[in-house]
Image (cartoon, rainbow, N blue to C red; front, side, top):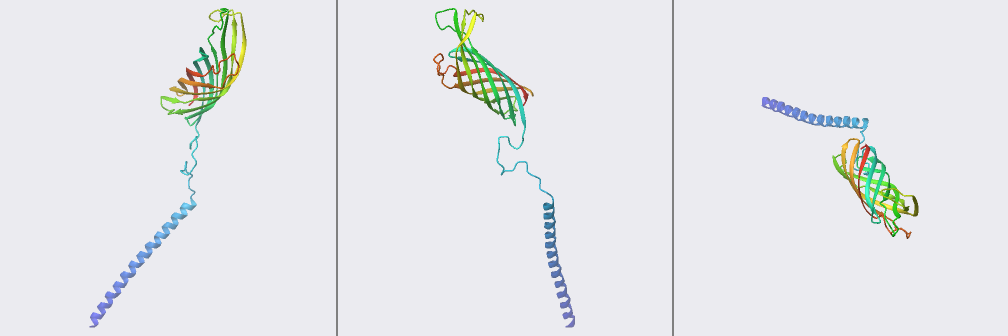
Length: 240
């Protein structure tokens, strides 16, 4: 009987030791997890968090997260009609390019028309000449592709003159020339341009646009002699 009691006592002690060991391991493991979390939190607090390049909560801008700025000098020539007569023009542009996709700058053009006769007097002919310029806004679609498109918009103003050429002989020989009348105007000229990336610093473009001008008040001019389509080509040099 004593042996049985002693055996039961030994079994009870062993079970209590096992139970105590399991509880100690559980508590020890819990404490270790707490220590690990505390160390991690300390490291995360002591080490400054790197700023994100572009967080989702930030306000989106036209320039985007980067600030790539290029530029170009452009030269263009074009054909159009003024008051129904053939006209030729040429001009230049300077613009900054923001992130390859948006050009902002200034553009100007000069033009002159062919000569024409107004009366039965064969020794007197007329022509139109003038110029205009203003702000250029030019979105560029897929600028890194070898062939891409842009949509330039010119907003500004200019002037036109109607000149009289006396004793005119083809091509440009005459004894006298004087300006008969002038007119100022505001202009908006949206267009489309197909561009070719010839080199990293050179682009060739084929252009088309439409001119909208304010009404002309002078009786010597048609109401809107400059309204109409233009077509031409351009060369651009710069950092794109």
